[in-house]
Amino acid sequence: MDVKNAADAGRIRDRELDEELADVLVAISVITKRLARKISENLRKTEVPSDGKNERAVRRD
Image 1 (cartoon, helix red, strand yellow):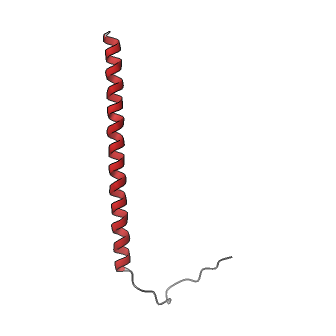
Image 2: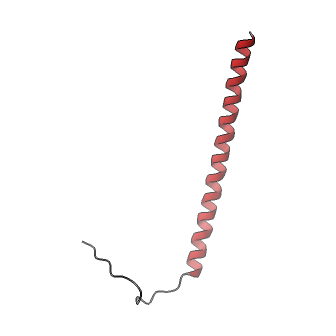
Image 3: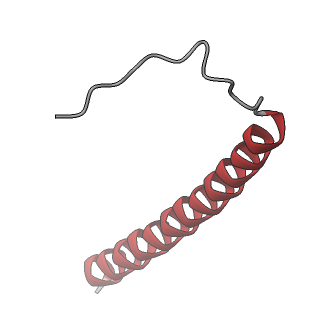
């Protein structure tokens, strides 16, 4: 029975680690989304209106 209990305990621990890893990945995703939003907002605030003088012409075929 000790081997079975150890195997069960190992599976439970693996499941707990998987859940913890999933939680960490979700947290990273949420933080990344917030940072991306803040960067976008800051870029919009600091953008200088273009007068077209320094822009390259792009050819579209």
